[in-house]
Every structure is written in structure tokens, then in C-alpha cells.
Image (cartoon, rainbow, N blue to C red):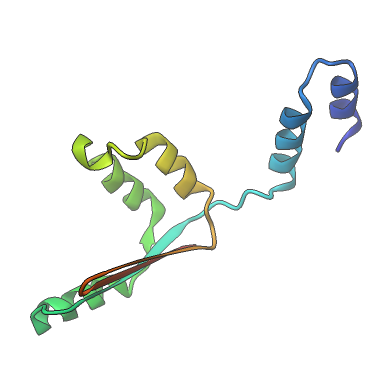
Length: 112
């Protein structure tokens, strides 16, 4: 930590946790994501639709477009999660892989 931050902590002007978070941001430990890639495999889907989904998933989706789409979701679909929190998590989640599996459907997201 730098000397100014440590002095503020010693004088009780700054909480130690806040000082740590400030330092972590300065060091760049929070990596920002730029792209989202996805794969979707659905059983019992016509071949042409499967090909269309595969061709769309080849190109990485810029995170700005993904955030735009996420903001347009209906309120009922986002009741479980706060959309602003989800956007913040998406922004700083570089290197995350999410896999969703259910009967006949497998979806995989990679955030880069």
C-alpha cells in the first residue's frame, strides 16, 4: 500500500477494508471483461436451427451488446437477481466459465 493510504488508516480516517479495496483497484487486480462467447447444444432440434445457433456462437459477442440485451429482459425474468449487480459482476468477471445443463440442453458461456 502507498504511504498516504496507510496514514489515513492510522489516523482512523479510512477503514482498513476500504484501503485494501482502493489498493486492489490501483493494482488492477480486477480484470475487465470485453467479450462473451457461448455454445448451445439442444437435443431434438432441427438440423438447420442447430447450424444457425452454431454459426452465431462462433463470433465472440462484445460485452456492450450483452449488457444491452440484459437490460431489456422483462422484470419477471430478473426477479431473482438485481440487474445492476449482474452487470457489475459481468464487467469484472474476466476468465469466468459458466455451464448450464438440464434435460436435453447444454449451454456454456465464457467471459473473456
